[in-house]
Image 1: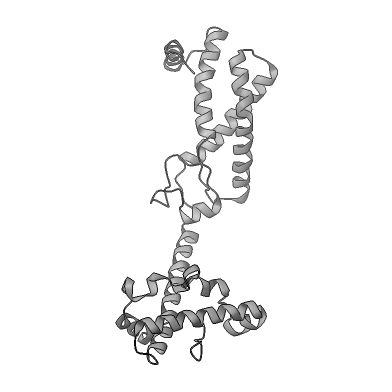
Image 2: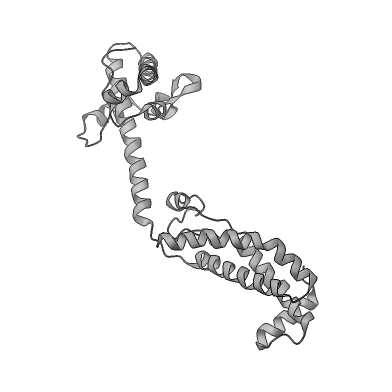
Length: 253
């Protein structure tokens, strides 16, 4: 903690750009600097996956949040250094804090102070840098998710429409659809290799994602309750589409 006297000394040193006059002044200055260092090294650290999804970027995935040690995606070795220096700096915090409180200029303290300032400076550069080298990957991720969701929606639409031709109500058609999806999941359990041969790139997780498994029901986004109307299904089914979808079950389960 710094006192009002500390703050005055620090401002005096900073404004005049003079060196501390004695050891007490020096450690007053270092205590204040340590608060900055600690703040930098306790800032949230962004992984590559988080940079692509924009998890911590508060609606601005390209520029990012103001205080975030960002993954820049420039060169792999730069990010290795970011990880290494971030962890080294954090590991040094307790020892440097204790050395400052002791107020003794030792070789160990001078060594640790130089290291921790370098670590904090490197991390600070990643906070302030707003360049974005992951835009292409981020765009691809978003596009991929949209295509996945569109493929799910198209397949469910075709399946419900094929079932509703056999039954009287939409509710019955949805119930049959759930049974058919559960049947496909059973195929994966019985023989994953045969199911993979049949359904190709669409694995068990793809089909499971269509259901609320614990309720044996379709996810609401595919139901009449959430406005997925038969008219929309028919429109989707009739439109030319380059989306890949799994084969439909040949009969109700």
